[in-house]
Image (cartoon, rainbow over all chains, first blue to last red; front, top):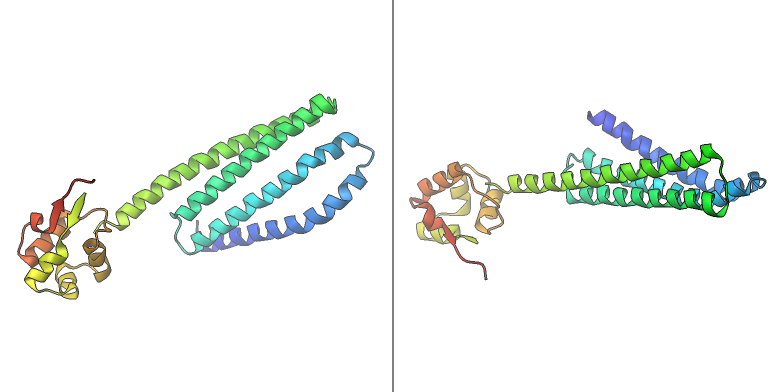
Length: 154
Length: 68
């Protein structure tokens, strides 16, 4: 990727984080009132909000990663840690969607198939993303070790 | 573990770090990494040049010691 594109991506992620925070605060207060007829969705919000927070956390982690790309130091342990953290956050999100799914089926008895399928899809998606990020962090870890070794070869 | 005795050899030959780095063709920072044992590996070409400049054998610079 060219430096200008990296810069644009960095700005875009910054905007996502800021807009996300700005939208999240009023929606936490407003949405339950707007959806006051549909209790099952309100219960689901208990899961959706923490997941929104986690998603913002992931965006923020990637935003931090763009700093190191701008400095042209991509192979650092800091980036390995960032990928690990985003992987963990993704697994937590997947677990929360599973919790939401169980809540919908077992507690609220909402059998609206589209909603169940969406929750199932989100659960599998974030589990997959978590595995991908975890694998990438291991790859970057090895690459960083090789780079350090190469840098310290005189 | 590998012990680097480069500073001992340099003292014997009465050569400064700057002079050795210049003659070998490496930076002083890299020579410092080598002297302090922070280096992970050394190229044969670098070792050859060091031996040539210091007029010694690789065994005079590098030593092996069992880790306790």
